[in-house]
Length: 112
Length: 112
Image (cartoon, rainbow over all chains, first blue to last red; front, side, top):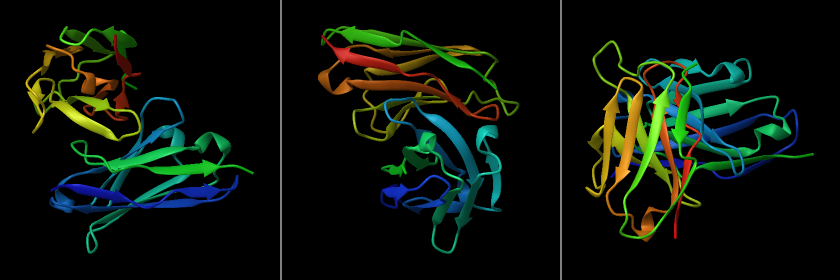
């Protein structure tokens, strides 16, 4: 059974950095890109970027460039997404996935 | 960026009746490798997106055959032959042919 299990909800202040994990099981981690998607409250899905676990090559959506870092650790089958310089507009649920399956989501709340 | 336009944005359907959602892309989604990377997801309230259709017309594992996808190039359709109460949620099309990958705005399906 494919599972992507994400870390828990985070409460952050403006300017902080958040790091979310995504532990994968049930398929070969290195064989599929790992995507991250954002969903602001009451809004649609927005593609954030991807990491190739095989070589850690990343591609980010332009609006996140400079603030985002995605990594993948094949020794633990875990992907990470770090978003820095948080602002209130970053309050959202972040999902990791391989386009076939998605994690349960991680709520990041940014508030002073 | 490829713009994905869904119509309608909301649907109210009587159980047992059919429903259709159209997704149009601003560029052809046919990849150089010959595959069309157009996916359809259902996001039920409070849940992660779940894959229904991949590569435009292939039904994902476990998806009822009431769901079908068709189309090519820039025009795609998701059809539900007989809507059931459990089909309520937001339907998204998603392209991962051209970077950055993009979602449609979502179509909210409710039951009459």
